[in-house]
Image (cartoon, rainbow, N blue to C red; front, side, top):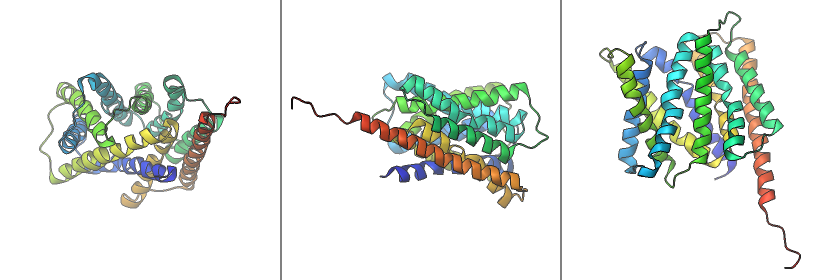
Amino acid sequence: MSRTTDILLTSLAPAIWGSTYLVTTEALPGGYPVTLAALRALPAGLLLLAVTRCLPPRAWLGRVFLLGCFNFALFWTLLFVAAYRLPGGVAATLGALQAMMVIIMARGWLGTPIRAGAVAAAATGVLGVALLLISPEATLDPIGIAAGLGGAASMAAGTVLSRKWQPPVSALSFTAWQLTAGGLILFPLALIIEPPLPPLTVTNLAGLAWLGLIGAALTYAIWFRGVARLEPAAVSMLGMVSPVTAVILGWVVLGQSLELVQAIGGMIILGSVWAGQVANRQRAGDASVRSVPTRSKTA
């Protein structure tokens, strides 16, 4: 499968994640972030385990639970805290810093060189997200900012370590392991810090089914497949597609306004995503050239 196909397929995951805000606000009860995150992760993980029939070996349990924490338990919890304490635009802009964090972490953990083009694309993408989402009236809350930065760092660490630790199983099995581990971490936390859920309506159940089956099981299998095939910095840039689809869905479904500045921000984001893929493709090409053995003079 070509690199372009891998990029397009992987970008489907953040495009679908852009529906999370709409589904959460319109179809789920408010005030239960950790409980809803647990119900999103664990059932989806157990379903995938039943489908794949592949359990992690004992030697992998520590890594699986660490990845489940970074990619799901810690990330989703901090994401909800940031969303509750900050305007959505500020929270999303902090989340967009993940791409920059991935570049730094990949350098430390994978030895990936830092390229100016990749850094410039990531910084431009953050600017685009800010233009797309931040309003002049946005207020800043220190706890919310810390949660937003922590959530971005958690997802960045999960992305890089998911590339570093590649088990000899399918992306679907790897997703099942991490979702189940993340759900097992979230459930006791939800029982401790949140009250019981009210009776769920058909709309609530449909929203949970969408977030669990499509927004978690399917999309993260696609995402981890991309992590295994593409450079971490290239994958992280694709995550910026999510706020673009979120704004488009808000405009189409909820009738929210779409200003010229937002449209410019969206175009900047898409341009930065494309530039990030070009920069990382050049890096991959350079690496492949370096890996070609030279002919010995004594041959």
